[in-house]
Length: 237
Image (cartoon, rainbow, N blue to C red; front, top):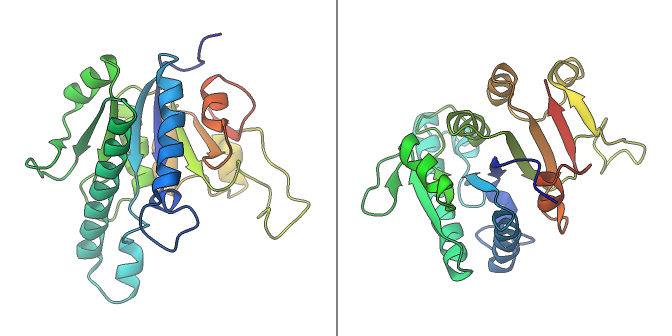
């Protein structure tokens, strides 16, 4: 049985790398995520990854404490580079070839983001990890995921979260909350569902780039999504 998607963009939050730790990178969690990514690459799926930096530093939090917003956002971008390097190293240890491309130029450490080179890496079976967001302050890594997904011709953006989809209400607070299996962009807007931040969501909608929200902590969920099974919530045109 073949995968439903040939090329995907996986959005990982920095917090996903923490596991149950208060901050930083949990090696056990990273190894498990990498093993699931390796499994889908063996199916022939080309994988691009955008990673956040909230386990190290959050730009919004820095700005809220009085720091200049642009400065705080640039610090957050540097945190994503650290996460991307850690993820790529974990992939190397599992014999999964990966490249880190940064929207900020740090040529001694990682490759600069070059669209054509990224696509070539993907075609040659390498995982490409996009770091430093879009390279601009005031834009989130959600927006970077939507942008990179559109640029590389991904067929879907997979948003990996702690919750297994989009619900009618917060499932932690409301036991009657129901998971949406599929929902249109217009329905998500009408119901004010926070799937991605508004800029990222608008970009995916305009590019007709579907989004699947699923739990990265649910074993096998990533594979089920790429196989086209009912996993998480699919947001579509």
